[in-house]
Image 1 (spheres, one colour):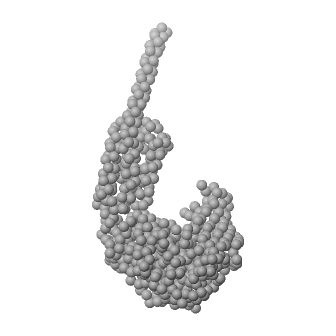
Image 2: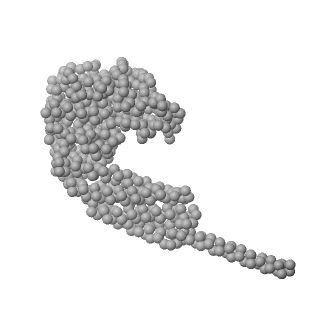
Image 3: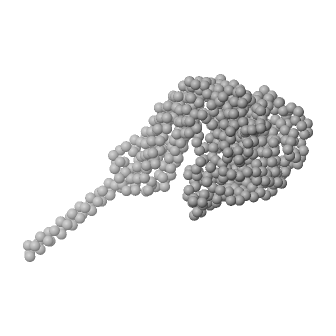
Length: 608
């Protein structure tokens, strides 16, 4: 027992020594961790100091590239590379990599390293690519675009798209669970900048691939340009009074034919083209009997088929594609071209284009007396001359391509520009956008309702009209089929004094001067139905037609508004019986592009 007791007594000191050794090791490890964390934190501050000025430099590169400041872009790329190299060097040491294993601290260090490597990869691409990039060669010169420059730009954009996609993936893979607010915010800023460029390059890349063919490389390509006048509203925009045929051959673009709506054989006894039964039921065959009515449908491909029949009937050369725009979109483009002198003596500017082309021309050109038009040919000559001069300016070289791209974007967003192409690749790129001139066929990605206006005054009074839409939906709160409601206000702003002084070409022959007659066409979301409708404020109204069209329920109501009055049209709609709110994507309303913007107010409680 004494021997056993001695052995037990000797174990105590040993256990205490082992315990102290373990404590010492743990303390040493903790000290090492603290030291490593401190070293890494110090390096992280150095990385921050390098990356902070790098982000604005990187963000400013695209603007310099597009504006043609190649020298400035190359200089910024070199500065960006110097900063990113310093940042990456700080993160390459063994101490940094070990510190990345430290709980919580490591996650922040990994995020900082990912940011440094991302900026460095962007810098490598910029340094390699930007000095050789010259967008000036891509601009039209004397009506021609250098297709070799387009191909070079395509290669560069494709390479850039791969680079930014890789960077975006790296940033997205960072575990943000334990990130400090400062690190999370910095990473978010970088992610936003990278995602924006990534999205732009991803959009631009397929366009550049089809652009040479679109510009007639190898095989000439023809385009019909359609100018819709919003002073006489149609669902798609307005009366397509001015038309022109443009041919692209190996990058050279030329206007070859001009036409106006009055030269076609209007007032036909039957539609010039076979109409879809639903289209004819909703709009009647008038859509194919007068060329100004072919844009009365919001479905641009239908308009193109009718236009093709008119064009062939007149014996004009066939076309491959159709591009439609309006004077408001043109005013946006004039911000890029600058003022354009016209042969008629006026100077077209971004400020006066809309009033001049949609209103003043009817006061200034053509002889008329009260109640009778004597000569409107001068107006047609003015429009033809203006269109030719505008086209010449756009194809001779635009000095501000950033402004032109912005004009195209704004025109597309507002539905003022539409493109139909016989090239399937181009059609696929535009699918689901307003540029295609087609309503989405499902509610999966977006739930789109439609509100459109067709003038029935037979005149140009819609220059004085405005509209607004308040649209409500409970799709984010409804347990069953959701409800949708449109409250549409169509206002006639003509004053009595204006009505007395308006020329006949503006007021037309069918109504008292200053009156506006309008068909309001409302489309439900896909699969929904119209439960009820009402009209207030109009002098008169009537239901013209209702039925199915474009996979939706639609109603066409005629309203007549005297000067200084407004019609308020309310339409209640219900989703499909077997649907629930979650079946519907984010809600929006598409409408006719008018002379002035049509505000759309969405009230969707619970949707965020």
